[in-house]
Length: 225
Image 1 (spheres, rainbow, N blue to C red):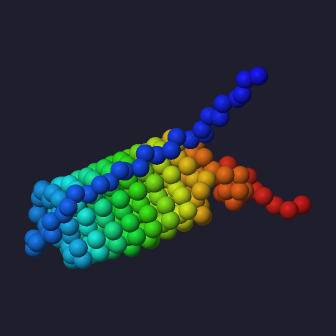
Image 2: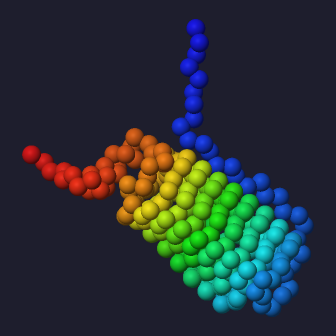
Image 3: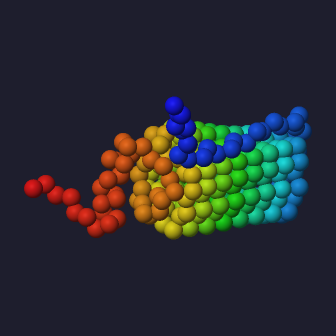
């Protein structure tokens, strides 16, 4: 008698395999536009207000850095770790993040519109008003992080997992999803675009929680007799 093979309902994301080499301490004064930073450790460095659009960070670690109003538009972060970074208004619009870990960040108003994230883990911490409009996310894991009012408007998400994280007042307007796993999210609150969850997987309990939002989206009133 043949056994029925279990077919996974969603493809899991590939996580980054980050192995940083021995790093040299960063001893610069100011970031430079189109600057090239290779094998450097930025430790408790105040990069607030600095201008580094188009810069490339390869095999770098940014730990405890301040990134208030730091301009890193169209920057490239490759095989790098950002740990305990903090800041408001960091501009990473159009940036490319590949094989990157973001650990215990405390940030607000981060601009990642039009960015490309591939094999990225965002773990712990809290990020308010994360702007990912028109971004492309592939093989991305959000785990143990609080995302307050994230904007995924028009973004493309493929093999993205939300694990033990809180998703509050999320905007999914125009988003496109494939193999997006929400089943292990601690909290899901969709403000707009609940109809864009096609391509995502949720749990039965989450379906009950989201029932009023689904009903409102299709114009169904729920009233007691």
